[in-house]
Length: 253
Picture 1 (cartoon, rainbow, N blue to C red):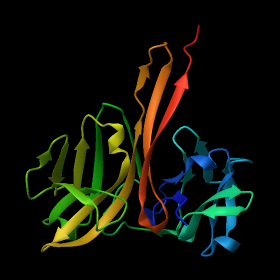
Picture 2: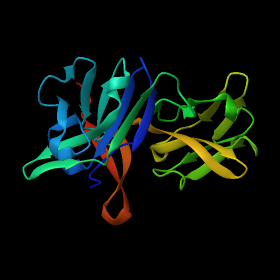
Picture 3: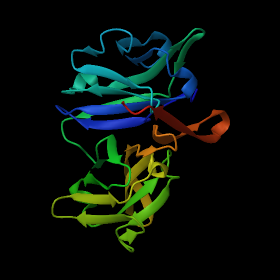
Picture 4: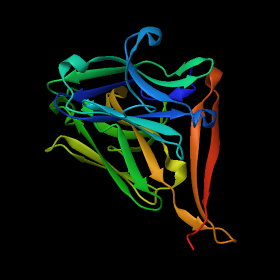
């Protein structure tokens, strides 16, 4: 069931925090959202819900109806937090759920790591750091766009032109980090992205993130303020459907 969409897996270092975005279709805008833990969604234990206390211990949930996303933040993660989790939406006919999300909490990050969620202002720039282990120090780094790795579209690579259009990549092997800068960010750039490492022509490691773009405000002919976003959801049978969200607001007198 892909009516709710999020990461398939994420690795976080012990003691850190993570924010997980859970995207849903517009028809679920006013429904209750929740976050639960267990391998099976039928028996998972609900940790937080949007219709009750939205923060319990180190876990909190926030629903953004405008952007059709609810986010869950887990703080001070420990080894015991490793496991399966679900983004959920309650409906009259039962729960609508996401794919499994597997959390791995480690004492030392291995492989490749970045934050799970970034935000940029429309028309502005964003720089994203991708940290890696020493073993990847002398290998090719790349940045690609798309929900599924390794089928995402590569935008820039460290072994070719390091700037393509409004996107650039810079590798700093001394600090074990490569950074990607996206300039003049627009709503078309809202999507899933991957930091990746390639060895001998093979994609060997990656870390995923989601980029949101805060809508640029414009004025309509009648003086109303207007905000626009776009969203792409994966429907049944793998079909991708993109639609726009428009919010109108009357200016204050």
